Amino acid sequence: MRYAGKSRALDALPASAGPANASISSRPMPARKSFVSHHLSTINPGGFTLIELLVVIAVIALLMAILIPTLRSARELGQRAVCLSNLRQLALAWVAYASEHDDKIVQNQGFIAQKGSRVWEGWLGRAFLLPNSRAEVIQHSHKGALWPYIQDVDIYRCPRARPGHTVTYSIVAAANGSLVEGTYLPGTGDSVPGLPNLASQTAIGRRVGSTVLRFTRLTEIVSPGAGQRAVFIDQGQAPRDYDFQVEYLYPKWSEDNPPPIRHSGGVTLSMGDGHAEYWKWKGRETVNIPRMTLWGGRSGSANVTFEVLKEDYEPQTEDGLYDLQRLQRATWGRLGY
Image (spheres, rainbow, N blue to C red):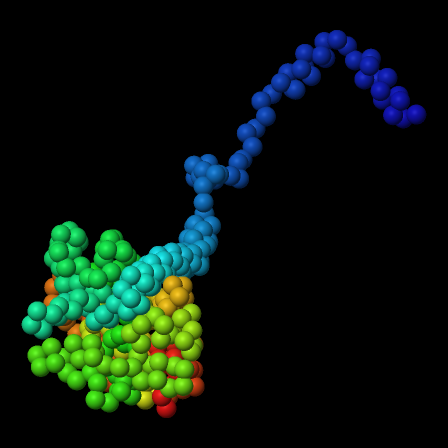
């Protein structure tokens, strides 16, 4: 009741009171104080803070650390595929040569040797002996006995070759190559004065059961078969001794022929039936055998260096011995110790 009466009293106010009330309500309100700093109004709300920027950089660094090894691995796989293709083509050319030369396989040792009127041309000619340029190899008249079958200088070289090396592939010594102790009959293969590399032309390979250790004809590859006898091997550098030699009578690596490791700690090689393989070395010891680098001259604008062992090396671990014996069996068909 009290409130209703008061309401009627307000309604009874004279009209003249209206303007007074209006003047009161129209008074300007005092400005409210802002608690937002004027400096904050200049910040771009779409930008990065320092912490966010550091997080982004850290993520990019992590991704790079993951991707770079992957990219390197992919590059190696591509180069390995090219190398295996080269080895297959060389092996098929090696077989084709024998088929056209009364079953006799090509002379293993590289370059050309001569005694009197007789000339021995190796599978690799003098054109590949430290040329000044790729064009010089092509123009040279002596490219080797297999050139008629493979007339492409790039097939003689692995993409992962050491700088300046125009050829990286060798034929293993067992395939009509250098004379290795215990692999040929005594009294044969006498050295030729001044031309020691021609001694192998008269050497007769030793036979153990059905296995011919050092073969000069395709028909001599019987036990094991051609698919298990190595022919070409990628050394990653030009051969220093014309061919790749691995011991037969002893469990050791030769000083001048270290195990090739350029293909991700492994080796590529091709067999007598024309197929090629990649072997990943099982032993860390095989990859880490102490080596040294020798200067071998210049090829074009590059210094040619060779990698050799500091000395003959006998494996000390089971895996290291497995790697050596695997290559010895593929080379000679069996072990000699």
